[in-house]
Length: 618
Image (cartoon, rainbow, N blue to C red; front, side, top):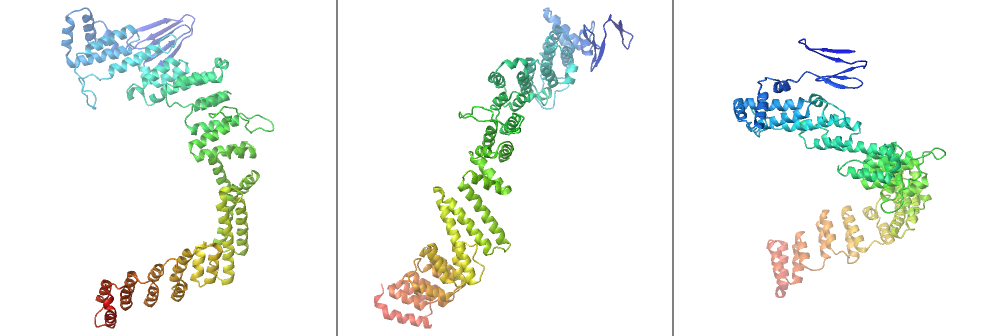
């Protein structure tokens, strides 16, 4: 019936509890006494409060308190009290009043103590602006602001509708972010939101690391409670979404995916779909859409399959959760996300429905074709055949045929059977390309490739040299000429319609590389080359042809300054002089004659030529 509290110096306090049971709860700065009808805080009077408010106290804080009281009474003694304190004692007095205001539980005394602190602060020396902290005799610049903010929070928490009586020490131990969390659990949304809003304006040491997201957390928790509240059952999904988006619009960058997940967990799938419309991060949106599509399935024979969830798309067409998930994954540009959706749809939808869903989008179709080509080629061929897609089927079969032949060729197993199989496959692919007017070139190119492979096989059989299969047309002609099979090269030219200019270029270079100078001379003598004589001469020089070969090739050139200079370059001055004489170019003749000693056989021959045609020079 009686509770007795005895202090260390013999003082005591008693409570007459009657028949009520009492609970004592320890705190950082005292204890709480809880009964069925009362809630009391028992603590030692804080030293700062005692220094300022104790009767007869001469502490600096008490003197500042008295100075403020005298100032309110318009007494001149207030000035004498302030002057008697001095600079250091005045700073101590202001700090004591601010601390006492924070520790006092009476709102009126808090205001009076803060007014006294403000009165004394006006006479304190200014704080330096450096980053090294306040000096010993200066006031911390944020002390008064921080205390006022905490007092506003504490007084709001002590109000009867909230009922969280805390002291300053308890608030500092608990932190303001934890207080916001408790207010959220008590559904005190407005107070929690206002405190979280002010946290963003506070210094980092007071706000804490989670201040930036506190406001967002309050709104998200409010929205989740709004979704699951019994009173929301009478509202439509659109009305709830509008109310939530109106509130969350004040917090840019807030995520709607957690709200959609909560709506799904309470069974409001359509609301979840509507909330996901506001989510900007596809990486958060897509997994939830897949979860919605899978979670909407029902038991029975088709369990595990996702029936459509009707929703009007931005373009006006109906699309379900899977279609929207695929669209959002493609818009994100993340191939891993697209593959996640593809495999989910492949698992939960029939094959025909799956293909019709992904084939309408180029990226998803190409990614699935790429996957099947590497892992399940039979499935891909079946899909393309069933859905009558000859071009895509031709692409797949072309890659498969070339890959198989290249593997056989690398292992030296590319015999007649492998080549025949390749030709048959390429012919089949060519016929499939022919069904599309946009792929006529591919069809013709493959038909010519089949013909070329057959000709290469015939060349290998007739020559006994396995060098031709796998080469391009130009390389095949080049190799045939280098090995001396000129008739086969001419046959390939006629068969594939190689132009004369191109054939001449190939043959000249091939003969020069083979250093078959006799064949090159004979080829040059056949007829006037369509590419001119310079390519013959350049190829012969590049492969170090003998001087006689170069001279014969130069002699076939028409008379010109270039021909004379070419003769000079290969050390044929007499022939160069003959050309200059025919051109009647005296300056050119003189330059050529100057290059040769006058007493040499070539010099004497050039002198005779000059005497013969002297009169004709310009």
